[in-house]
Length: 113
Length: 109
Image (tube, rainbow over all chains, first blue to last red; front, side, top):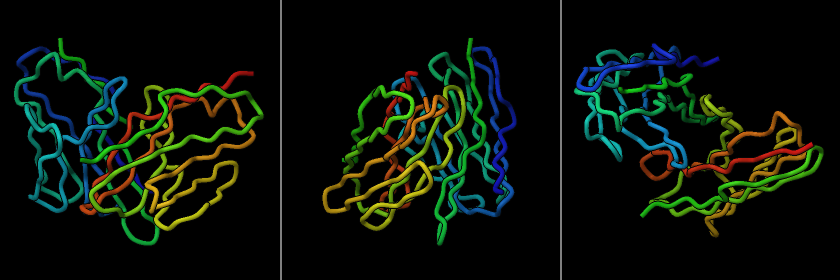
């Protein structure tokens, strides 16, 4: 079974803090994604990565950055947290080929106060 | 642009059948996913269709028509635990999943 693990289930941070959300996968997948999900909206892509040290902006990258120094780890960084970044954050990997499937971490519910 | 359209909410009765429709427009196409998401949890995989037709997997079936930009998820013998949101997500030519807002399915006894 593919496992995607996010470092925290719940986080509360103060406005202006630098926040790190970590995601680790154990199946050697090349593609990794960070989404945020807000009520009434679909998953919105923040950043994605197709390989180590490679990153591409998604639809809503403003206020975020990412790091992928190792294949199994994809980190999302909020440089200076703001209240409008309160959301559910989901990390995912994509397996392509005979059994194409996207695998999700358990999600991190971030509250910025 | 890329667009997904699915109903916001549906209600059905335990034991019945429900069909959740999804229409989409994407830049290229590399298959379509259906995911189930219970409140406060991560999405879980239900199906992936890349060719036209119906694929059946237990109580759940998924249908795809690429020429019409249309898919549906069919749930049979509904159970209370099927109350969840159902997310339609086609994959575009860059292998990006395009997510709709999902359909909230409410099952009543």
